[in-house]
Length: 184
Image 1 (cartoon, rainbow, N blue to C red):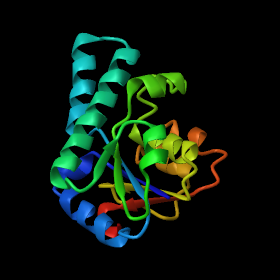
Image 2: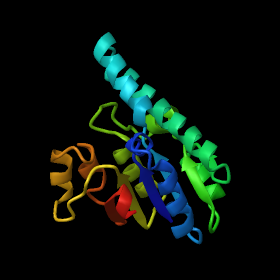
Image 3: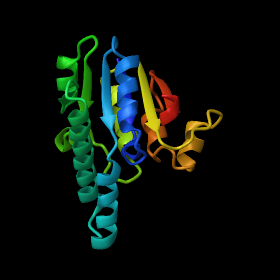
Image 4: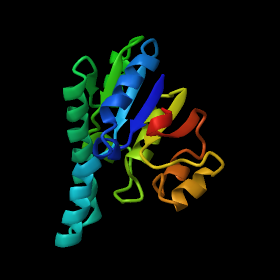
């Protein structure tokens, strides 16, 4: 099983559809779970928090809703993909060749003690999901250029991946690939 996190910025870079088409072609015979980034929806949460100064827990919950909106957008573009809302749903529904879109629930992430912080974004949530469902591989598809010589820590320093990612994957047994949208 492969977890593929599609950065929310792909929708702003106008490459979301082409990435979804490539995903559908390249992984048609493998079980795949897509983790959507929050994209412009999450950007609005950041702006609102800056303006209204509400707490990180509220912002975190709103960012999860942003991921849910992106899941709906992806489903609107690829209606043959299936939206799932929990790790139990994933384990029950995953069949060979089926593409799932994870629309995470706030309750499941709260029960898993996921910290409410901007250091934890959909990158870290994708890593948590990959670990939880025992994926073989985690692929993060980014709009940023990726230098393959950089370590995960260096990618976090450059804000290519979130600050919490390295900690989430510290004991990971799955393969991790971070790629640019054009190399996917």
